Structure formats: structure tokens, C-alpha cells
Length: 228
Image 1: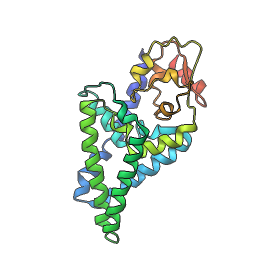
Image 2: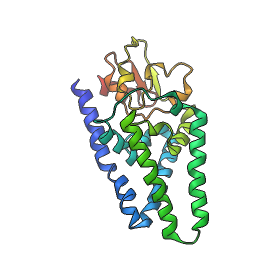
Image 3: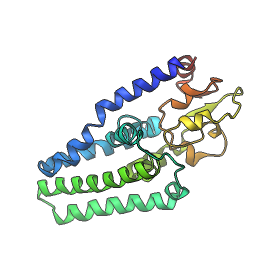
Image 4: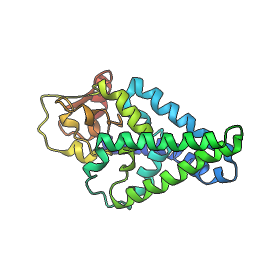
């Protein structure tokens, strides 16, 4: 239990460094629009890292994800995320919607750099308000199920198989309760590619498993040792 708490504390400390970027851009960006271009860094980070480690960016490196865990977690209703937010068609629509909105605003403001930066700030502000409402009313990471960049990372990570379940698994469900995305880690070895590719590689399930039955492919030795 001490190792589990230590792992969660480490993750919380890392998130404490990244969440501040969200209000920095969402609030200060209205006065300093060029801050809006920082969003491209987050986009590149989410997509780039997904090639190697799936949605790991969304764990603690994503400022909004960190904010939702830290500030929505304590006040969220934490109920089951409706299937609507997991639907591939809905997620695809959100990707097209957000990129269309950004594209149209960039087209209308082309050449006016501050206006283009402000367009990014607008999108961030609106989506953050939605994320906060969903985080409070349903679950902290509800928005992460339909986040456009998270969805793109989810598509890229679809062919990856980051988590393995050992024979010692007794399907107790503890890993599912510890997962910030409400996934079922013990079922990843089965035909469950859509769920598997939303794994944040946060190690919450690995640390919480009482049977030490979960491990990541390339990190198998490390994760098992840390869970011991």
C-alpha cells in the first residue's frame, strides 16, 4: 500500500508542475494572444509521444488532464462515463469540429498573428469550460474521452499492446477502479483494442494490483519491481 501511495503522490507532484499552463493560456491568453500558440506544443506532444507510448502525454504532461485530475477529482460525482463519450463516431465528429473551427478562424484572421493566437485561446477556453462541467457532473476525465488530440493519439496507439495481464489475475476489479479513464486493464489482452488504446500508461492499475498481475511490454521488469 505504501508503494501505491508513493506512486500516486509522484504522479500528483508531476501534475502540479503542468496544470498551471492551462490557466496561463486560458486566462492570460485573452490579454496576451500569442500565448495561444502554446497549444500547438501540446498538440505535437500528444501526437508525437503516441507513436512510442500511446496516450502517455494525457497522463500528467497534458495541462488540462492534470487540472481535471487535481481539481475536479475531489468534487466530481465520479459516475460511469456514458457510452456516448466513448463512441468512435462521436469522437471523430469532435476531431472534425474542433479542427474546422480552428481552420475557419485562422482563414478569417490570416496574416493577423495576434488574432490567430486569440482564436486558439477561444477554443481552449470553451473546451475547458465544457471539460470542467463534464468533470464535475460525470467524471474528471470525461472530456478526455472526446478530446480531439486525445482521440488522434488513441487512433495512433490502436496497434500498440502496452499492457499484459498475467495468469495470477483474479478479475477482482481493483485495477478498473484505479484507472483514471475507467478502463478495464485486466481485459486488455482480449479483443479490446478500442479500450486499450485509451490507456494513459499512468501505472495506476499496475501499482494497485494486489496480485502483481499487470505489466507493460517494454517496461515489464520495471513495473513489476515497482509494484512489488
